[in-house]
Length: 238
Image 1 (cartoon, rainbow, N blue to C red):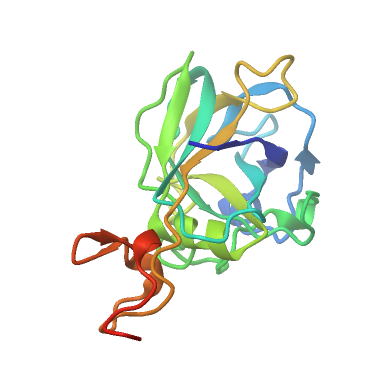
Image 2 (cartoon, helix red, strand yellow):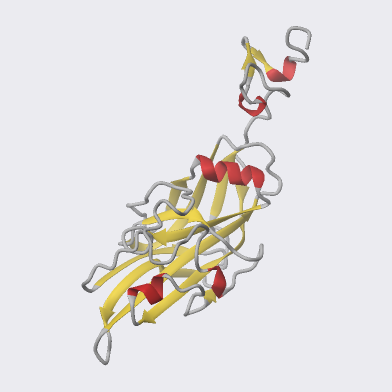
């Protein structure tokens, strides 16, 4: 099972904003991006709190992990994003398809994931790469199973960009109307050593028979009448 290390990872910050919309729907992360953190207890976050001078302030953090998948030409059988937790979790999350302008770089304008619509519930607009994660190991690897959409992008794209976004307030456009603080922590690749590094682990898929058979795509064919495709040159003389 091959393991991939990130080409880059980091966090986007929209903290101390005067409204939920300002924090959530900014086209560029107001607090910038950090690509050098070793670990962070609020790598995925939504917070609503009272402002020092009155009023309410809102804060959001989204994290992203990019992996080089240029060497993958066949759909993987499965893939797992492994993230080592730091402290606990109160922010449930999804992994969704990120939308960075440049491979191997992160800038504040990469804050919004692919498919984002301002002011809308984006649960169906973004490309989800995972089921909702509602539990988290605070001192161990969290293993997030990736969806078929992620597997297809690992095959088709030179890089895959995995953004982690809070699922109860941030993604569905849900201002709770009262103060709340949710956060989930994790380690990043800049942490010393490799024992807690982010990992994209996958099982290589079979190339399949070289032609479609009776309407079945070649990549989905492993055997024909019990014979491995590697041992088949022709079917019925063709």
